[in-house]
Amino acid sequence: MNPSLSDHRRKFLRKALTLSLAAMPGAWWAATPASAVAAGKDDQQDEIPPTEDLMREHGLLNRILLINEEHLRRLHAHQDFDPAVLASAAEVIHRFVEDYHEKLEEEHLFPRFRKAGKMVDLVDTLLAQHQAGRRVTDEIQRLSNAAAMKDGSQRDRLASQLQVFVRMYRPHEAREDTILFPAFRTLVSGHEFGALGEDFERKENQLFGHQGFETMVARVAELEKRLGIYDLAQFTPA
Picture 1 (tube, rainbow, N blue to C red):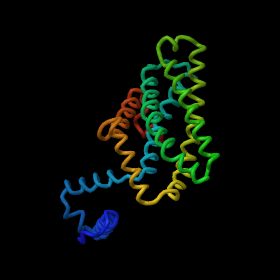
Picture 2 (picture 1 turned 30 degrees about the horizontal axis):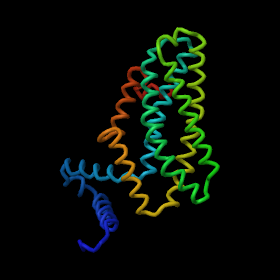
Picture 3 (picture 1 turned 180 degrees about the horizontal axis):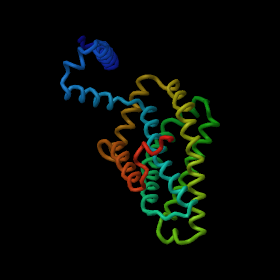
Picture 4 (picture 1 turned 180 degrees about the vertical axis):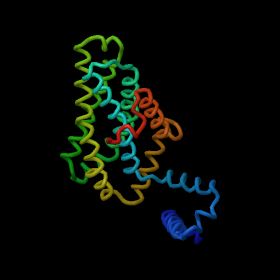
């Protein structure tokens, strides 16, 4: 390959070649060793765009919202549960969602919208909800203990905090996924967009180690199992 080609051009040609080979029935997949296919997946993993990275983290948030909803259901049904599961879920929210995911949005996305004079009202609302969410998470953590579970007023307070948390974050993340993130791509160049993806990955590795996202997914899955809501089939209507 011509050494004068830019990195972007080389990546484009490499991906185009891969797609062409993949289109040949039985040719590429049959002839490629499993190790090479796995390596190709790793390469794609390393090039996750920043907005896609944020959206998959919303998937993790959604699973925690499901955990919160199950605790809310049990509180309303006057059922007992291990508050340590809820406390652990709140800790994931605090460390991964609030201190990492939301900080990325606040430091890298929101300022660019403000500078461009676009969707400023939306950004202001999203930021206010981040701040409100942190206050609610603190309260959920404070109430997620055995002593609070024995007090009717504190159980009611916990239920109300879980309800407002879920109610806020469902539309919050939906608005980011469908409005903010698609619009963000129009505010930055291709080079800047790619560099942000690398910055996000580097920050994730610094805070949570290699494959930090996958580690958090495994942690949430374990909480789902302890709560009895891991099996996806149980949510299928009869």
